[in-house]
Amino acid sequence: MKNLLVVNVNWLGDVIFSSPVFRALRKSYPDARISCLAVPRVREILESIQEIDDIIIYDEDGRDRNLLSKFRMVGRLRRENFDAVFLLSKSRSRASMMKLAGIPVRVGYENKNRGRLLSHIAAGDVNSMHRSDYYLGVIEAFGVAVEDRSTILEAREEDCHTVQQMLSDQGRDPSKKLIALNPGGNWDLKRWPAENFARLAERLSTDKELQLVFTGADKDRPLVEDIFRTASFESKPIKLTGQMTLKQLTALMTCLDVFVTADSGPLHMATSVGCPTVSVFGPTRPEITGPRGTGQNVTLQKDVGCNRRACYHLECRNNICMQAVTVENVYEAIKSIQDS
Image 1 (spheres, rainbow, N blue to C red):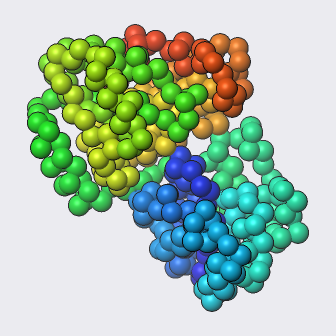
Image 2: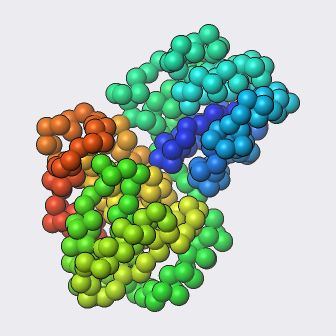
């Protein structure tokens, strides 16, 4: 096997969960060229996985949306002469493309009646396995040994320099420990209440040995602005919300003493570069989507009955599972990491 393709999933956290797949493939096939097909929004994370040689962008919601573009992609894949493809994505259309591209070995899970499109079928239940183990199950079905299941990302030196300059421009005091708060989230149900982040930030700002920084995507700017308006800080936090690329955020996490967030892509980025984290879980389950990185993690979740299994009831009005984790709980978790 000299030319391998991995068809990845679409979401940031899940792509991070796939990182040990590439490491195991590299271990088994050290001389192979390993490519990854994925959507545009996860490119920067894929570029932080050092075992990937080439990234093929498949913009299924944009330029590759129409049928002609899909056939062009099939033609490109055919010209690449891949020996095998490992389908982490459950998409039937992508499996069809791999067969049309003439890739002889096609490994994936039999779902959406796509078994006839595959040459090797993996066995596993996405609802009961950790997501990373589910993805690793694809390559294991082909006999690839997995020795290390941890997620690992690499921060680039140039991004580390850029982040250090950004922090310095906003008054970073290098003598103080740096704690980042990430109040955003992919969907509202998984967010810890903004007022809790405000109260936590107020409390942490009284510690003269700490310096706070707020992170988040551009869409999180209004949320962070609300927190700044309602909170009373003894020392004003650094605000980097909406100012960093994913690569720069990865670099920032190598500088942090603690990162506080809900279940989110940035959580997995942080633990994957070895950053200590405090994560607040509510509707999702840590045994399914909990961090797998090398960084120390304290996961906080309260049993409120309805979250004993992963809950995706997006219309939930009171979100009691997230509200059940208190500011005191998170503050004590931060202190436990600092004291360890």
